Length: 474
Image (cartoon, rainbow, N blue to C red; front, side):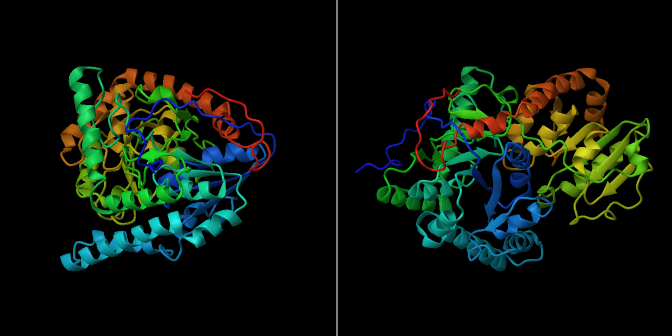
């Protein structure tokens, strides 16, 4: 018998989903990756839903809990036997240690991959995880699209679950390159071929390594549960198949590339613009000198060459005393790593980003979508130096929409960085374009579009299938 997985098409047609209208308060659980960026990106939507009377909760491996410590929503750990608290940080610390002998590094990576396979089998087939979902009392699960397997587990219990993208959509689209690509689509034949090749290469990689094992486990799941939501592996940056169910994107279509396929629900940027953050030091909070913020995000410390890049940025500002630089370098480097600093440069471990952006004229960023959305929401143009994951695709959109520039962090010199700073600050068109997009962002979030979209996916009476209202998606 052909399973939902085996019989799925390699390209997703536009989805005309049956959406459910909500009539009462619901318990909505977020299942994010235990990463700062993935968790913080949900806060704006969670606040919208809570303001409309819904009960919010989070469920994730224990390493996610510290990122929720200042939030009012309850946290339920899951998979703690496979990924105990602190394990993720310990693994990354060991792998990145240059003094770690190669055999020990290989052993660490092999153990990490072994645990990932255990996670797959536990989520798809484990009684403990199934019990955790059942006991949650959830009316709806919003599952991080980067790890969609809990959606399949929820389908066995009849719990509605949808995939939420804290980046742009991850499934293959004939008109849009993967987010890992720097390519900006032009509509030409050559551009189309480049996009097609990039997607084909990513698909072939799903037959290798841990992804190949995952395909086998997913196929076994569909053999047992052919009624589960169909999916395929024509995707990227997903540890699992792309499921052809409503896909929620925490952004607006105006910032995305124009897509050939449908089935996406753009929730708005879902930026928590009112979050409580510390104030900037007085010397940075005021003054006439334009302030430039530089930060490479929560993963910036994991990329070779970042310290040299920071030094190039500092040297560029040493030559521009009329500007002010606020740079966050992370605890791994430390604020003392650069020696005596120019008077117009402040280096810190961490920066209250929204607070700084309210004062900033420019941000030098890694291009993580959270940072990009916050810049746009504050009307701040950018210079993006993408590192990994979806950051190249985000930087391509920055350039495409004319709201900033991009560069190569491994080749950046003081002269190149300085020239880009002069171009963006000296040309008012960048700020004008980002302010026009800012209005789109703010209007989308103020309208409550995200919460209304999620409510349209809720059953009218808990999990019971009430009469349905068919809503056309786009």
